[in-house]
Length: 99
Image 1 (cartoon, rainbow, N blue to C red):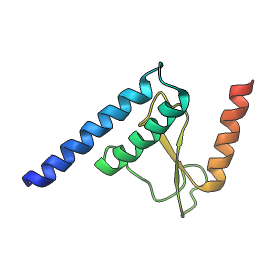
Image 2 (cartoon, rainbow, N blue to C red):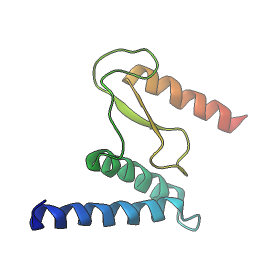
Image 3 (cartoon, rainbow, N blue to C red):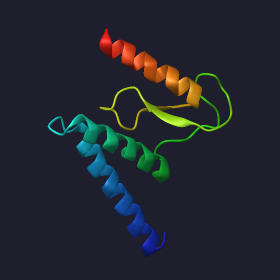
Image 4 (tube, rainbow, N blue to C red):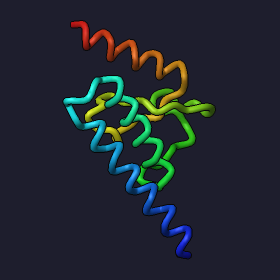
C-alpha cells in the first residue's frame, strides 16, 4: 500500500474510532449519539468492516437498501433493508419503545 493511501486509511480508522466513542458516550445528547452511530456505520462499510448485501435482509428484494440500527449502542451492528421494510422496522422499534 502506498504511503498516501495508507495515510488516508489511517485517517478513516481514526475518524471511525472517534465516532464510535461519541456514539457510546451516555453524557452526549441522543441526537449526537445516533448521528455518530450512523456515520460510524457508513465509515465501517467504506473501510470494509461491514459488507453491504445486494438484497433486503427481510424480503430479499433487489434495489436501494438502507442501514437500520436496532440499537444505537452497537453502531456497527446494522441490518440492510429496503425502504418499505425499513419503515416497518422503525414502526416496530417505536412500538417497543412506547410499550
